[in-house]
Image 1: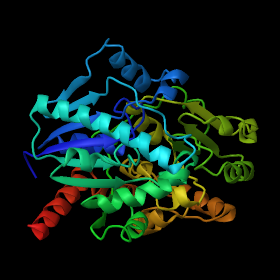
Image 2: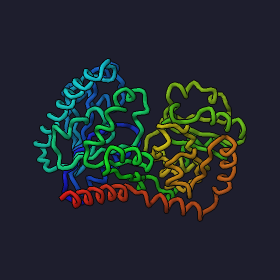
Image 3: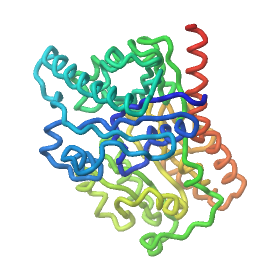
Image 4: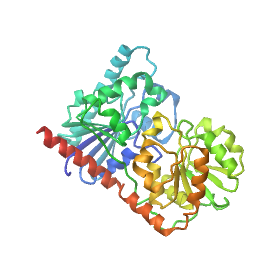
Length: 401
């Protein structure tokens, strides 16, 4: 697909400081099409809380007219920051009041999008909604795009903020969209009851960054840590990672070093696992340095809890681990079994984890297995992922002509 216009509305601001499926998807689309990425506006309560991260600071600069609301990222892609705040809806007491205020917010966002599309001369555009259940709920009605796509890549309605109204509104958004995309067969099964034009797609990995055939320098803070190193890269989140399981494993394998590279949430930072001498928390690192950390690990892990949030989620880090050629031990979830079973160990409890780690360590010097993992990761490039989206769009349009 070439020379089309795409508008993307997403929960994730462009300036988020971690790897992002939707950002990589947008950049891939922009290689052959024009893309306008709308940074979702902050609400007044978020403004008052003052998160002060990079995304918050950027949006505040735009609101205060200290920065232009439009940035051109490459020849075919623009980022638009909303120069206003919207009304907070999360704590509203009734459904009627929520829907009324949410419509006001949607109309304000739609008016701004129309202003920018006129300025950039976007026409006949495809609107891709990235899990933006509230602030994109009525945009199909207000913007009338040529095609409306809802893309679910996480079980956000399992989070407390979304449970009250997201459970009600996500099916409505899926039903009114022309196409629904899901990044796992598990999610796709759920959405087909609302929209028969539902398709599962696999996300991708930045193969230019995560290059397992390249020689990488060992990060300075890794050098003092004894091998074997069992490593994790990503947000250390207590709602997704099984901290108690990790504690038990680390206690039973004291000669293994367990290394976590990424920011911790408050609950995890207080966990007793911090008292173990063979566990290391290295904190948040720039994205471009993460391959060097993965390369320094002997075995990579993704010790998730199994719940509604994690079971169907597509863990992008698994593709990153594979692209670096590393043995992997990850909790057995629907998506892991469905996509990654041939190239990972998938334990379901502590004893299976211990056995899997022991087996995986025996593969660290196996060049054949390393190359197999890298080759499999290459089938999950962003180019392949976006081509699947193009194919789905083209097939849908042929059927509806």
